[in-house]
Image (cartoon, rainbow, N blue to C red; front, top):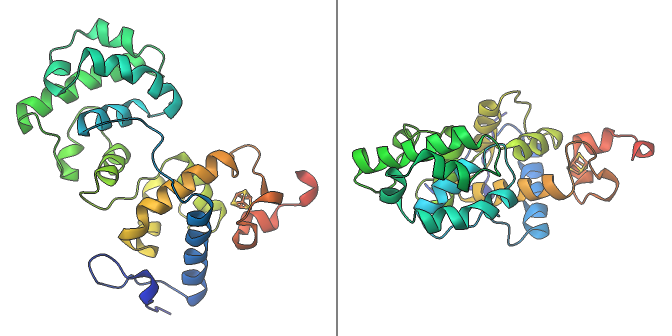
Length: 235
Ligand code: SF4
């Protein structure tokens, strides 16, 4: 059965179709709890403009935000914009970001990304998803994060926390990142994607951890398929 709910009306004014009343209620309840738990949820990466944003997000792949925040001040001091980074020496970038995972590959990608931005986009970060993903080191998830942060195009990025927590909560049965993204973007209105993204990330980091989810004290347990099924003796 397909129903429509005014509570999840999208930015475009069109209603988002869902399968059942139960799923609508559960999704909105989960979002409500996440917003109450993390009212100021936002990216933990530090950046001041779109140049710093794309660099920081590129560096954050398979690396903690904390580690990225430790290396970016020196990187941005040495290379304050796309033009400077496009002319950078690879060895210098490698030295500056040497603490992050895959720093050699990321150093190459940073320089190539800046060079293409200068050559193809006049030194301005492209705002179209299909253009963003042509930049070195910018895949679908990175482009989604960048556009979501810029607020220019609603996008829901699926990182490891969003993937794990949304599946445990029963919001999706998707077994690939793309299927989880498609499932969540069908269920939730674009205006909620930013809150959902950051809320699920913070809940994944603080409570619904990969190895040891804190189900007994989790505020979402009553709504969670995984948490309700988990024996309390195992915590
Ligand atoms: S009840 Fe457990 S599995 Fe469910 S969201 Fe909370 S911590 Fe995660």
